[in-house]
Image (cartoon, rainbow, N blue to C red):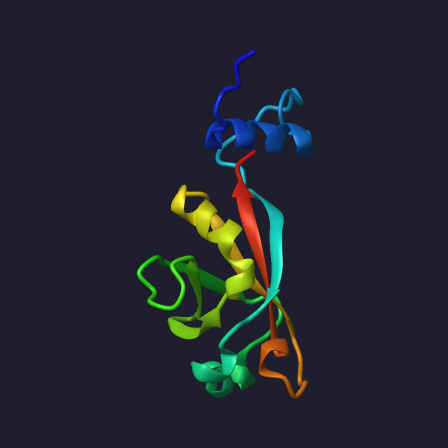
Length: 137
């Protein structure tokens, strides 16, 4: 019995089948919007050390954030920076960034959004992020 390596294409086929998109017999006309699969929900790390406090009044749940891979980061080779409108908000937490950084390194299309904002005293609880995998139907 041989095992074939998992590929990005086979994962996408699996996800399409899981979502009921494969073999549905429904023709797609034009370019279909991508589906999003929630990959991870995390707090924002480093909020207090970057531009978070200054930008806080303008942040809203549902706003998109840009995920930027930083393989040369001297503190964490799996670092994923979180930017909002060109400003650094912080990072995905080190203990939660391994899967996302590997997916980004493989070229997977990941997007992020602000999931929630909190007024609590702990900076690491102020901003919650959702990370999504885009899957084309």
